[in-house]
Amino acid sequence: MKYQAIFCDFDGTLYREDHTISQVNKRAIKEFVNAGGKFVISTGRLFSAIYPKLEELELDGDVIVYQGGGIFDIKTKKQIFGKFFDRDDTIAVLEYIESLGQDFTPIVYIDDTCHCQEFNEAVGTFVGICAIGYNVTHKPLSQFVRESESLPVKVVVLADDENCKKFVKEGQEKFPHLAIMRSHQLVVEAITKGINKGEAIKWLCNKYGIDVSKAIAMGDSENDIEMIKAAGLGIAVGNAMPNVKLAADYVADTNDNDAVAQVIYKFCLDGRD
Image 1: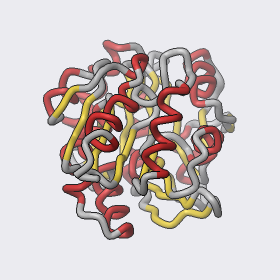
Image 2: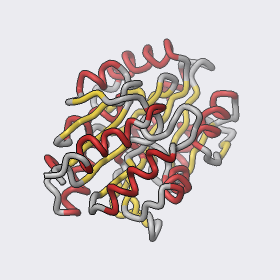
Image 3: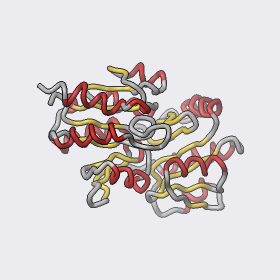
Image 4: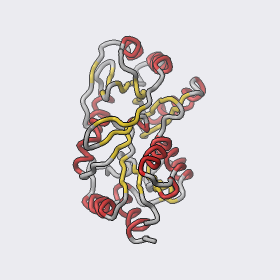
């Protein structure tokens, strides 16, 4: 096969809007893996949140989580690669979000757990879609991080579309040394620059002995751009954000129309060398 590995975002790319994975996509992924390909989910989710979906897909290799901040061995459930968000930067970002008022809801990931100050509708929607539990700190998250013995992985900001745009613009100006980008229309993520899906797929390609030029990367959101640019073939799904499509080599169909399966058959299984 010309492309020996596929690194695929989950939400908005493989996962449909009705929160299911189609049988067509499942079958194509299995055929690709059985033919010797490496199929790797690359997500911003917690490992605990994505693990049930990996079981559903019958994948037992590796998975990229935390927006590239972690890589886990699926079978052993052990982390084999990890980077953390600088504690002082995390606290500074959280204090800034907390100063913005109730239109912005911060979340911080620590120890593969989602932490929020208080439960609200935005948190409920977020954890419901991601199918994860959460911890309510009942104290500002900036204080929680300052007191925590464990290091954070990333900060998530929940807001409406306009406020997400505002936060990205102002956050990038205020914290130019950080990577601040949207992973969804209503979600912004903040993380240390250099921690991204692009670096994670390079690490795994090296582990597999596969040149990154022989890899495909697929995604829909701003946090997918680095891996789309890093791969030999970068693909945006049809429902991707406009700037993601601009970064891609090819724009596929939408997540609801089995884009992943179409890519597998077009570029891998039917396009064998």
